[in-house]
Structure formats: C-alpha cells, structure tokens
Amino acid sequence: MLVTLARFLDPWEAYIVQARLQADGIPATVAFAHHAIVNWPMAVALGGTAVQVPSGCLTQASKILSQYQTGALESELLEVIGSQREHCPGCGSMNLRQTMQLRQRIVAAAVVLLFAPFPAKRCTFLCNDCGSTWEWGQGDG
Ligand SMILES: [Zn+2]
Image 1 (cartoon, helix red, strand yellow):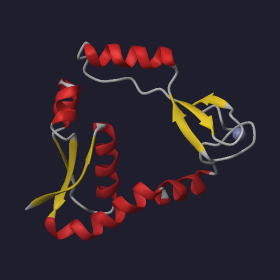
Image 2 (cartoon, helix red, strand yellow):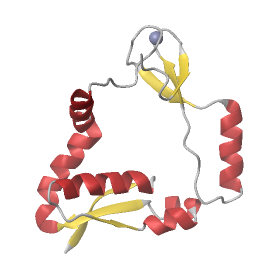
Image 3 (tube, protein in one colour):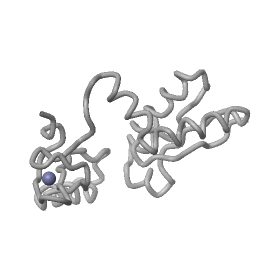
C-alpha cells in the first residue's frame, strides 16, 4: 500500500525528491502533479503534489527526506562538486533571506489572478548582515 511521505507546492521539487528516493532503491511515485500543471491555484487548494512510497519503505524514505530538508544531502553534493552554498558576495555571510522586487511581486500576482498554469521562479537574496542584494547564482566567486 502506498502512503504519502510528503506534499510539495512545487511539483518539480516532488520529482526531485522522488528521484532521490529512487536512487536509494525506494520505488517512490509522484501523485497529483498534473493538478499543478493544469491549474496552480486549484493544486494549492488540494494540498499540492504528493510523494508516495510503499508503507514498508516509509522509515527509510523519511530519513532520506529529513536529510534533504535539513540540507545534509545538498552539503554532500556541494562538497563533491567543490562549490559553496549561496552566500553574500559582499561579506561572505550565509545568513540570508530570499526577497522579490515589487515589480516581480506585481507580475506574480497578475499571473496568479489570470490563472496562468505556473508561476515563474526568480529570486533575489538579501544579506541579513550587510544588506547586500543579488540575483540567484551571482553570489559565487
Ligand atoms: Zn553580506
């Protein structure tokens, strides 16, 4: 019997988690992803996209999900490829929060109001320590 391991508002994140679980031999499946692709607001109302696993794999899958959510898996990957987490290009701090410019917020609101199928994902980071802002991917260096 399949049980729901986790739900995601972003169906692509559900597919990433599914792939990670499958890499460890867990036959995970993604359910309700088509709702998000066809009608984003309806998908949100229905609880998003679910990652499901056989009930016998739930303990192992929960452990892997926890490692994903805490960033442990990302840390391993960054170590292997020799990269760093997103950090402030001004002071090197990793105490950050994602922001969205007013113009982008207006566009996102218009997209949702017009029932476009999927919101664009573009973000800006704001350093909580020095106030620097930059687009995703420009903090490397
Ligand atoms: Zn900074």
